[in-house]
Length: 133
Image (cartoon, rainbow, N blue to C red):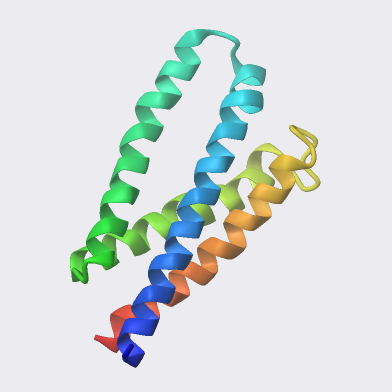
């Protein structure tokens, strides 16, 4: 039987996983359309890969640790959930591509807003999980 704490934990893991997958989708769109607009060189893709690989590795690691019930994993997942989806979801429309974003229309617009909303909901679920312990 699932306890209330287990349900909160499962919900937080699922929402954080969804936020992670949506950010990964956004990264694919960035690699296909955005980075080629700024610089069409392979060096730009290499630099972006060197930045994104550790971020996704850390995000996956934190989610794995959180799913195993480790408080440090929950805290790291909260940081990544706020840093990546919400940061990118808010930063892009404010600084680079105001809504409605015409780059990769409509995919970028949908992914930006999906990152913002799922990131916020996942962060709230993680905070609820941290409080329930």
